[in-house]
Image (tube, rainbow, N blue to C red; front, side, top):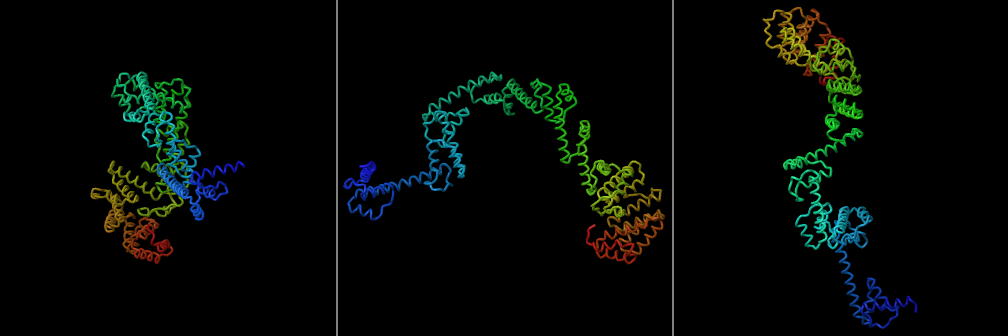
Length: 620
């Protein structure tokens, strides 16, 4: 008989014994019973024919055994599935919904449960499948398992990271002191070797504490317990860590001044070493924090600028690299200051000059120039160089300094592109000069006249010369400050002024201010009085003409303008007054009325008025 046949006979006999069919006499492997029992043993469902055959041959015990085997298999299948579900929940892997029969997860979780270390391939599989929480737990389990081996606690069965033992072992691993309850827990769980390791650690720390007290002159502190705050403080010092304010305060309270001094000297030594490295002074031999170089480098860190004595000290010791680094650092800080829109002060500019940083000075001036051009609405002026006369003028305005006549003349003659002048004050009088082609307009004009007005006010207070009052009032009007002009000319006491020309000038300026704010009756009163005092001056006649046009009394206005021209007024000034009336007309119908009057009278001379028909909705 072949070996294979012998094996089949043995297998058949074993199955007959297992399923209680030994009374069946046929031993041939070709038997139907052998086929049926093999199917059952492999967990394959039997057909009705096969069940009926077993009944026909009265193999009742075999039927019972098969049923028990099937029930056992079903129960075991359920048990495996339930155990997998519990492990999923325990190790935070519930979102993995692949069947336990086809997934690697079941085997990995069993590894964790049985304290087998997970491999790199296990970790990779967990990450690939998005099981980050499970992976985190696995890492903790691995660490826990290693700690149990390290601290003689392998007999303890629980390997889950929430175990109290794990918390204890982590403390032991960093030589942290255990509480009495934790130590007793080790004893109660028969982890005597682990408890002994803790005791050894405590003995070593006590010996270290004694050495540290001697080393850092803290022997006057008599508390030798490891719970004393002194122990971690001394450990910090020995580990080359800087002490906190609270630690220093504690040492001061315990009068451990020697310990503080040692700690501070060590801290300063470390800081000095770091500063020497930073400022390329490692070849300097003196490493003591008492060195003058340490003081210089400390000041350099705080102020970013070297003093003259410090520079001399460094030059004598050929530490010029420090000077170079310090200068570059300070120059960079000044440049950042400029970038942020701040102005440099005189000492800073002087420092830049002395250290040959002319490029930064130029950069500062260009940035300042750009800022001033923006502030005074002259960005259309193309010259960006700091040498521009406009920059000098804007600086004067910023400092509230008076402009030279040549400055004013330059502003009146210099063109600007893309400007948008603002018409809301006395600039109408020179409008032909401020059409967006000249620099003396807008905020520059207001600043100029404001400075002039203040100057003449101060001159009046100094000299009591009322011509200064007239000049100040005129400039306030041109600075669009009619109310200020009126306030200045209140209570004139004309009877005390001898010069009629001055009286007329003051009244004309005051009348103009009233006109600026729309109080035409008060303006007329001033103009008429001015004419009485100075009938040969064209200024009050011009004012009267403008007032009449404001009231739409055109023939009266023409009369007064003609009288002004007879007395030396420029006809173009009359046209400017009329144009201002057109511009400032608030009632559209009134504006059209003025325009129609002008075009009917002289369409060529007043052709400019047509633009106000087309743009009648423009705000001026």
